[in-house]
Image (tube, rainbow, N blue to C red):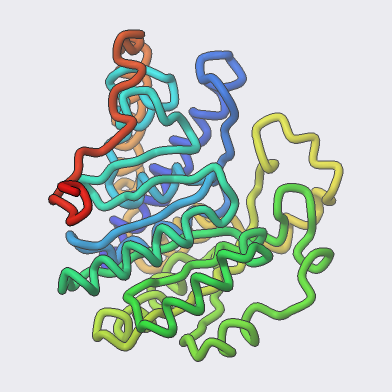
Length: 321
């Protein structure tokens, strides 16, 4: 465990998201943005175990996953700005970040939409004899969708290398978990005989250790595993959300993952100047990312229909018929 790298990722996600909020409010980022502030420890702790050859599916709240995976901040920021230098050439935006070079099979604007993609990727790994794992992130709202149950069933039945990560922030948009779910997550997951762990999603080291334990079985070929991270989004469902559905006092029960870990590192003897230097370096990186995005050109209208279809990778028997 590299504690300074864990802190670096926590800090990068937090400050990236704070910049995104300010830039969106200033009218520089189009569409909608769903911030990951408060949930940084989940992506950081889980994806510290990412290896080349692994895959990932994300959600509409996917900036943190992409940054923890190693997607370059400048190309990410340019994508949010809708510029041609973005990781998706400005065509995906906030909710559809996609970076196949790093195994990121896309953020997804459809609730639970990444789950069947992850299971399909897991089947692909199995058929190709690959050694990777598919990290499948989703929120508590996704557990009420049919594809969630279908995905668990197939992954368990075929023992696919899928690591399901539920980021339970207790609200699906504006609806509380208890208002819309008649089941407990653990009992449901164990019904499919999938290994399950629950963890404090505000504690990055707790997430890291729980994820590591579960991933041992997945990488050993014993089938899927399921991690439920109890976390909390400190911001609304989207920037501008009036948040009439919850009380501000609720957040007091969830420590700030960044502040919590900084305090822990100082208590372990990490010098304050070391952390300040790391933070300064990250601020410079993010300043450059914003500058890069602002200076990047808009996409050419003539390229609007490019990248929509993939060329076949092999000949199918019926093509010659």
